[in-house]
Length: 355
Image 1 (cartoon, rainbow, N blue to C red):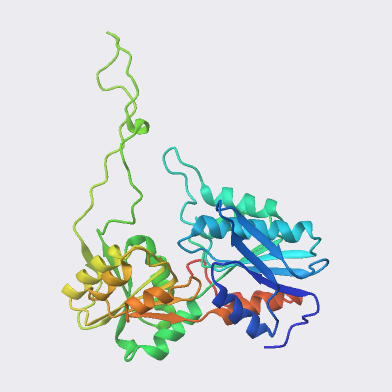
Image 2 (tube, rainbow, N blue to C red; image 1 turned 120 degrees about the horizontal axis):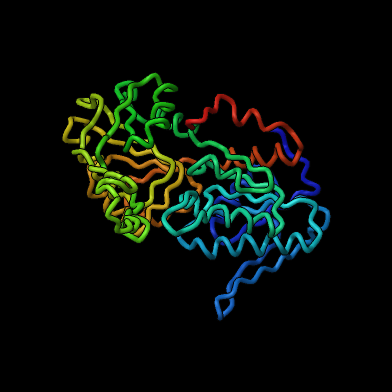
């Protein structure tokens, strides 16, 4: 990797993932910029930038963690502080974009990821680098360029180098919604796939509200009894079934995010019943909330492999099954190419829509 022209590049970081920021700065051979981010006694976020940023290209490393709202405010205030200090450009490196699951209209809610995108652009960001968005369409919410990098090459490399006898594996989609991603992995590894059908998807609760109440039908002697707006038939969840053979094979489940692990544990139990002798879970982002480490430790899952887009050192201390893949080299190369005005196409080589 060629050394970047570092005369006018400044890398600063919030409190979300300082270890990743230091790894990126080390790979670029750049000293971290002086930036202090702290909270006052009234919980307001304060940002103090120690170095001059006038006319320079600023790269802000900030990811989404469990303290998501503080992470967002830190990023917005840092970006606005750089904007008002006459920075030439402000690039946000957000390995895991918060609120990316709230990218569709739900009942009387709203599309929160669009609101977040508007806030980021208004704060002064001129470019965003992120990784494995939950839905690719989120890029369209931003008024600035967005590079959505992929972690799949790193996870594929892990499968080939760290899973013994991976040729005897089958890529498993935890539900039909992740079948495209599973197919993409399977085609690259020349393996078969299996799909778990009938498992409850992640809680997108369909609670009864006024939207589902039938419209009032006017009482009229001339009106037929059957006239009216047809009612949507309720979905009936089929019994859990594995489509594909996993007997005597290594089952590898792939997803973009692993947060609440109960659905992964339930899927692993089904795979174990069907004869899978080893079960791996691979995901780009490892939030691993609440008691996820304990559930993984007590489950049939043999290994959970995630990248370091989100810090999870504490969870690794609680569960020896959690492994980490370092993706700092990809982020640092993206920064180098953007800074030197080089093409980004190499980083998207052979990337498909399913990735």
